Length: 154
Figure 1 (cartoon, rainbow, N blue to C red):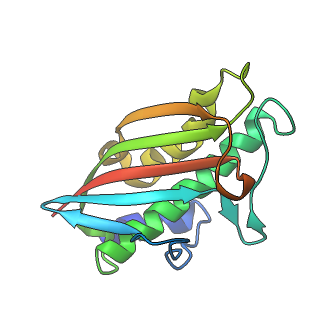
Figure 2: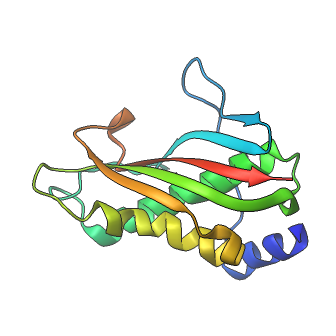
């Protein structure tokens, strides 16, 4: 199964980065029983942080792309937690997404779809999950999106 997840990532043109290190006094993930809790991953790409405020200087499409990048980091953390073996994934349990947005911006769910859609694209039915998508007045480093996740593993 890991080969199929890796193959699917390749088909999607995604090369997982090394799992990002935490920016403060916490760990990037914790395994409790058969659950992996991944700390919030902030929007970043190979150029650095993806910053902006939805409804002010960033549109929904850019927010979706930022959320997708968060999901890539979440999968990289999952891979690290599983010792490099994504076949251990049983299902994506939950995503909680925070969107740096203005008070009148109401498309947080559309933005977080960037992460949700990627989980299903990569993991199929096992990628379907529960979710929250909420507004935040500000996020660390001025990033546009932060997402945390819970995964079930073997």
